[in-house]
Length: 93
Image (tube, rainbow, N blue to C red; front, side, top):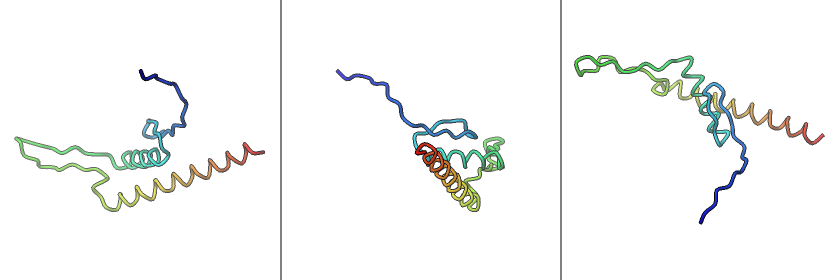
């Protein structure tokens, strides 16, 4: 019979998104996506009599904003790594 164990693992939080993630990269991607969604809000498609007259909008449909998302998540990861390195140095001394 299998047993359930309680273990502790590091979890990474994306505060703008308001969720926790198991990897730092996933948290950085979610944080960047939430920041873009806050600046460029999603618009739902509009239908009337079964016909779509407005396709809506999401930032991932814009090629430029997809590149901005990649750069932003890269910068968030760089800032996280720098903070982790400083924290590791403090623990050594």
